[in-house]
Length: 384
Image (cartoon, rainbow, N blue to C red; front, side, top):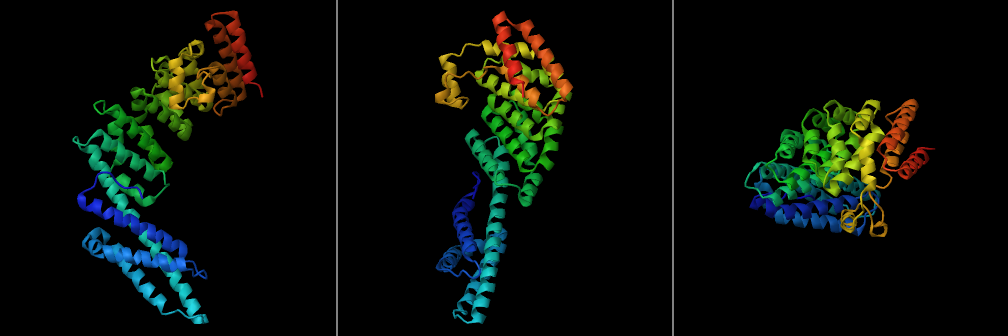
């Protein structure tokens, strides 16, 4: 169970009880199987009722947990009924089957009720932490990580309602766009936005496309922000790529290839390759107009320094066994391959752009040997 970081003292004392109770309810549900009346079922019931005895007063005093208290009372009543049917006659077997089924349903409701309560605490704590100026950077990052973990469990309509009512997306977008916020918090907010899009594409993609999120990611110009942008492009596909073209952000993405930060350059190349795979002809044309091929050739000529190798291993760009590999190796050919196998162009457009790329390679090359090498790579990589 994902626990919110920012909680009052009462909630902090309550959460361990809830976590234990939820785990016990899960075990009870797993063992309350009709026709399989195992000892584990009895042990699971005893475990959950023991926790219920310890926490009943606490739960009853909390208005938000009265439904949970009622469910636990129902569970105790069902267990008492179960004890009355210990025999092996047909009637006892049938009654035990019915009661075990009811116990399983109540256990499921207990799990759900606890998760709903914790979700409310999570969203309340997240919003409080993010909007309070006095909250530390570490607390904000911890709450955002917890929020992402909760989203990663999959779609939940009740949790989505909590997120929408609390205007969490708007808060995350505000943080991402706020230059006064630390880079670390802004990057974490960007990752949370991407998690929301994966959580429910139908709801949150529109918010991303209509708001300042995309421009803010590119303006932040960090390895993380560009990776988030690339993941959004991969997930949203043509609507986002077309939006990037419409708002004039393609040149800014291409210019990130010239960054002084190696990590940003690597992230920007991945983004460019994703755009090449998805983009239609207007997008590719806009990319080529920004001297993309020359910039890619400049990257291919870069010296692969020892410091760069160490950095690449640390960030996972290459493994230690591949440390001699260069992140920008054959990047012109890789771009051409993305166009060739991509989904945004028809056959005639692919052939036309390949001709343009070969022409641009000849114009930007520093030697005949370089021209021959890159053209061979482009032609070989683009073949079936």
